[in-house]
Structures are given as C-alpha cells and as structure tokens.
Length: 293
Image 1 (cartoon, helix red, strand yellow):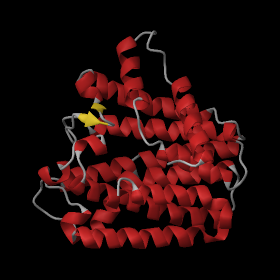
Image 2: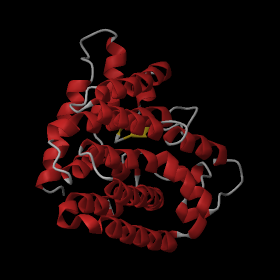
Image 3: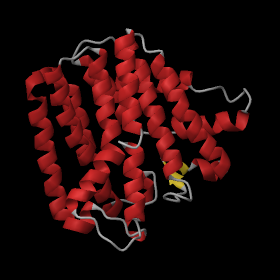
Image 4: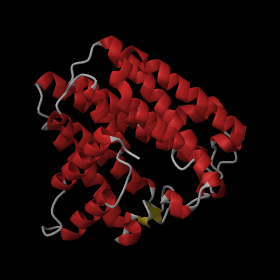
C-alpha cells in the first residue's frame, strides 16, 4: 500500500498524464484514443513516483516535477506499446487490458507509440526550470530512451530471444541495465537534476537506480514463472515460451531470490548518505522487490 506522499504523487501523476494527452474528441480521434488507452488504463506509475521521490530529497516543488514525471511515463508507455507488437513480443494483454494493437490495430499502435514518444519531449521542454536544467533533463531522457538505453537493450533482447544461445548472467544484466534500468535511472536522476543536485548525490542516486532497475527485472522474471496472467496484468509464462534468457532460467529461482536480497542491500547502502529523507525511495525499492511476493 502506498504511504501518504506516494499516494499524493501517484494522484498528481495520473492527473498530469490525463492533461498532457490529447482529447479523444479531437481528430485524429482513433490515434488519440489509442494513446489514452496505452497510458491511462492502469500501471504502477513507478517512474513518475521515482521522479517525485528523488526531487523531494532536494525540496523541489511537486509542480516542477510534474513535467519530468509525465515525460518519463509517456516514454515508458510508448515502449510497452511497441514491445507488445507482433514484430516484438507479440502480446495480447497489458495491464489487464487488450494491448493497443489488439484493441485498435497494428498501424495505429505504431503511430500511438511514436506520438507518445514525441509528446514526452514536448512536455519535458516545458519544465518550470531554467534552461540549463531543462537541457540536462532532455539529454537524460533522450539518452535513456535511445540506443544507449532502452532501445539498445530491446535490440539485444531480440537478438538473444529464440536464438538457441543462452546469455550468461553478466550479458543478461547488461541487457536489463539498458532495456529496463536506463529509464529507471533517468527517472531518479531527473528528480535530482531539478533540485540542482551535487555530483556526489547524483552518483549515489545512480547506484541506487542501477540496483533498483535490475531488482525490478529479476522480480519480473520470477513472477513470470510463479505468477498468473490475472495477477500480472500480462501474459504469464511468456519468457519460457519464447525461450528467453531470464534469471530463473540461468541461475534458478533460489539464486534469483538471493540476487534480489543483494540488490536490496545495494539500494540501502546507496541511500545511506540521505538518511531519513530517502524514506520514499526506500519504500519504492521495497515495492519493486516485494510486489506480489
């Protein structure tokens, strides 16, 4: 259950996303409806919450954090729309709802993902901050979303899926550091950038975010084995069916759980310099590890 601050930030994130998205009454209506379907029908809002939790360390006003929080969630939503396409993971269920290409059609899903990506940067460019910080935010999100981050990780994941070649653990961690971890790191970093954080603080938060991003993926791999589609909101057992390299497949469930414990410790150590001020980031780390446990 979310504590008071996280609950408030979650509500802010949902409201800001609804404001940022185009009206389904305006043309092109089908595209606008698909974009709203992709973003507003559920989701943990982990990345917007991380922006707010990180920014709170530096006493940044929530109104300043709304734009980067919205932008990072729009990028995340776009990535899910494209990830679910037949040419990628070919999934029919996301957040307990039909995926966008199922609810609408494949061409509309591609366009919806494209439009969400561009909207993210338009929103981010309007962050209520100075030009230096806005440029740093734009660079951070662009790098995390591109070939050096999420897209690069997806490409490596596609190359390894169904190829008959098992990645080793180090290679798998690299895939997830790019595919999942880069956007999580960007979310944490953008909140701190809004507070003009010093280099030592940014370094500590990067270490926290790297551990969090990997923990999120290890837990996701475990849930794909142990969970069901209703609980997960997406198709369970898909990793094994596609012969994907996952942590349980490579090292087993017990060792995967042990790796989660190591990552929890790494997150805790990274946040030590911030003391009690980092309680929201600690709570989000626990959520990532303990979800549906």
